[in-house]
Length: 147
Length: 147
Image (tube, rainbow over all chains, first blue to last red; front, top):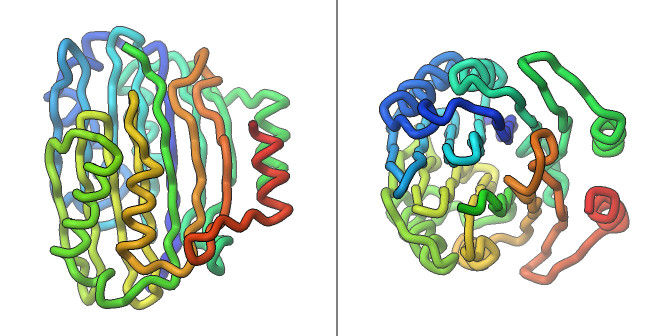
């Protein structure tokens, strides 16, 4: 079985406060994201934070999708880890739209790619404003350095 | 509430086949790792793979710890994401020892650290052999570039 995976780390900012604090809506969004990424859902565990916010994970056969929200900062920290032919970028599109994020910072790490000590590669690190990719010079340099 | 978090991505290689395929043992190790990291466990979801391997997540108040194993390759892909005063490095020590890994590749990404589009920083990317840190010239350069 192939060990290759794609691990997408995403920071969403400028999100809708009400959505970030709505556990049922966040859980529904994350399950929709898992389906969009063409993964098979095994379990879905979500928990409210006090006084606000949500933490949760969707365990899928192809790995997992997690979210942790800070409504008071309009901020959500997310990761989508998928193996095989799944498409974590589709999950990202669902969240970017569903959270009404003004900005998304996206880091793609390839996993399980090579020999011991050479299994992870930071493939890209970019910022998207209002769903429009905008890559700064520094991020562009970093992407080149690590590719 | 502070949004800062530490996200440790780890690839363990040269691990014990039997341990990687033992769901109960992997779940116990991950729960021990969560306690070592001084996190508070909310839920623990583990699932066997066919024909072998385990996938699972420990959801904690401070975020999550996940593992996906490929026993046939002696390989496990792990992430520990913690906020506040938790110590994901302690969780890593538990797994490094518990999986009997010959090699660990560790990437530390700081999360929620700044303004929109500047929230993630790759702080280090190193390889440990037999629990002895060994940093290659290339990795050392990368750590400097991104710090």
